[in-house]
Length: 154
Image (cartoon, rainbow, N blue to C red; front, side, top):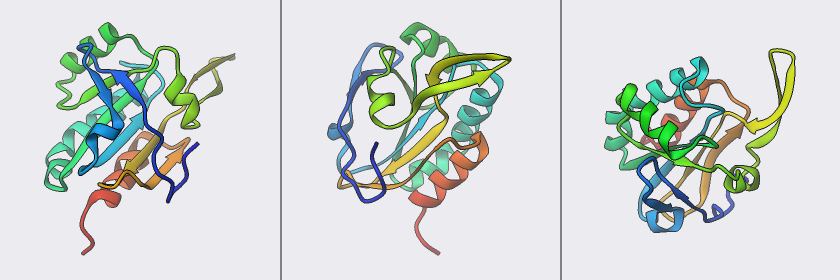
């Protein structure tokens, strides 16, 4: 699991359209990654829509944002269209990236226990270094903290 100050581990995942996104190809930009449990569920809708609503501020900070889950590309494509999300969603169906980044764990929900993505966020700077991040965070805090990390200091 990467920690603040570590070089972000590289990964390659397909977006909702099947295009492969490689983290190392994004050097030179700030990158916000947020992991979410399941597309089109209340907490995930809140998180994704807050990133959508703050997208102009993210662009002003010369940052790129990606949502990541274990959902299929088709499910992500449907969700992206339904909520007019202006950024790519990455599909990690075998949860390799999510596990490596510490965001795959056993969770409990409605009296059931199962393995799933854990809501998280990370910010990577232009050189590929993790400058902010937290595993197990609320939808609102993930957006606030990510924006604070990419915004110029006042």
